[in-house]
Image (tube, rainbow, N blue to C red; front, side, top):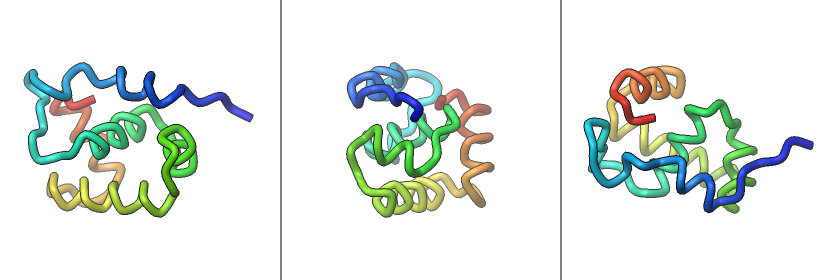
Length: 87
């Protein structure tokens, strides 16, 4: 089984959360965590295990992120996040 980084490491992967060109003020801290892990290629199950939340919660956060950012789907979300410097 693959080892996942502890929650603290996942949190530390986002130095841009509070400032910088990729700052996304409309997203919650948890949504930013999930976006970062999606960008690293984590599945919903892996994100749920890493952040100690349910897979349904991950899906809800992803839907909210997509709605807030105006993208069409998860692939477009990750593409946009990379292009904008969010991840």
